[in-house]
Image 1: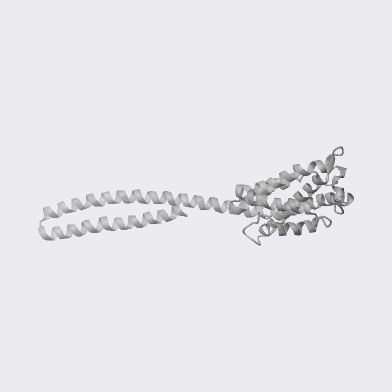
Image 2 (image 1 turned 45 degrees about the vertical axis):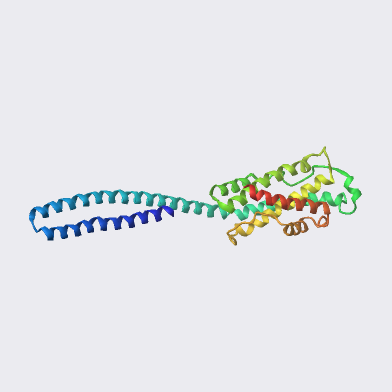
Length: 269
């Protein structure tokens, strides 16, 4: 702590000052008294030495008082930091469970989107791109369980640095994902196209991989969370979630765009 270093420096300076304020006048007193040898001169020198000594003690008390205040400030900061770390570790215990809930939710969504993709034969030929389909029919929950966002928000109260940035980005992406995928999952009357579907597919892959990247931090295998996406990880993600879509060039283009957006997003937080 900076305050403790300053306090120790003040105490060191105070010690040196006390030694000089007592030693030099005393030495001068002895020398002058040895020259004069008279009792009047001796009392005069003692009075002068007491005056200097008293001023030095008062100054020393002020310095020590200042050092004590700085030391207390440092102690309070250290106590607050220890409490923050304790509560952060407490919340971090549940982070793995929360991330698992999110991935399970996304996997269910991926099953729904994949069923449409396969049913419409979008993976077979480009003429299918002009086909339309009705939304709705998703048996998965429309929104993430609110406890997921509550746990993540509680984590941000005690996190800092890279961990705070990673979770804030995740919360933002969760909210965007909910908004973008809701129509296709619920609207039975609206017509949707291939491009509506692959945007949802790309969003689900990006979010899934973002969550997967946080598991090592949540399990305490790493102290630095990953919050940037890369195209290699996204390729693995699409293979895992959408077996028929891994060679779709339009989805690859959207995933490349997601990587670029991830780089820019990491700079804005």
